[in-house]
Image (cartoon, rainbow, N blue to C red; front, side):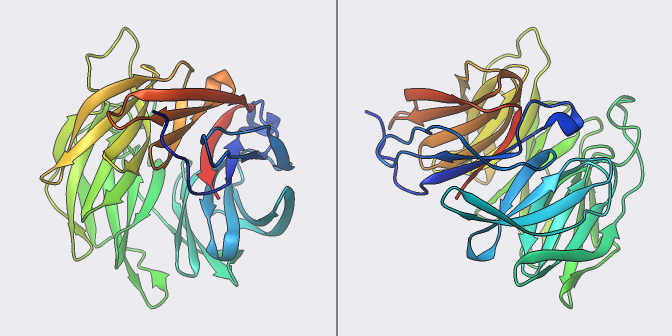
Amino acid sequence: MTPAATGPSLLAVGSYTPATGGRGAGVTLLPRDLRTGRPGRPVVVADRPSPSFLAAGAGGLVHAAHELDEGLVSTFRVDGERWELLGEAPSGGSSPCHLEVVGDLLLVANYGGGAGVVELRDGVVSGLRATLRGNGSGPDPERQEASHPHSVRRLGSSVAVCDLGTDEVRVHELRGGGVEAEPAQVLRLAPGSGPRHTAHRDGRLFVAGELDATVTSLTVRDGRLGDPVVAPALAGAPGPSRTYPSEIAVAPWGLVVANRGADVLTLHEVAGGVARPVRDVPLGAANPRHVAVVGRHLYVAAQDSDRVVHLALDDDLAVADRSEVEVGSPTCVLPL
């Protein structure tokens, strides 16, 4: 039986636009059927260059990271099918690819280097306050020649910066309304793991390793990270193509990991604070860059197929319903 689809009535979808070689039109709104969970006809609401990642702000505002050489972040308001740009600010580096709202700050992971600390005034981006820098490299000469921050996550009294280029998770203290420039902890994960995105639940941080197809489980205590426990990102054996995990998200049963290359969603259970893969769910579309979870409904940005794919899972976590909507080069799905 298809699960009931309570929750948000809209999905905002970020994309790569022609500004960076993509086929997207900016930020697209998709109405969401509250009976079936299926996304409806797209409505383009924001003709902006390559808003590749979106984050919910206070009071219904939405923040976007524009993944450009001269990185930008913006804030806009969505009212029905209307979109209003409220502010823009520099991201603190090139190719901003992830956002985290922390009080009156918007933290930005710039893949080109550095994590930007952007001030929010009345919930709207207003200016760059600081940039948190990392140094080093990793064993992969193509992807790890330098620092490449790929995500930022709040851990209570601190924030964790995942650096794909250096195989590090750097923990910075939150203090005095800002973020301390020097890390209070530098945790080095397995060489060549390429830490990308994280999920935070039940006092644990789970890190998707893009380059070695793993999920690392870490305890979080007093804003610090404990010893890593590593598991495969896939439940089954890898196929002929390399697997590159992208998004990792909290779900009612534990976690879900979007695995590119294999083009599956992998369902993980969490037992004793450790993630373990239990099932690979074929997507039927290429390059699942991001997944959003609303109960047992999954919304996947299949970048190379120009599709947002909806999967509804039944009580046994089998696919009870599948639908898709055409969206050019989708990169992020944000339930509103």
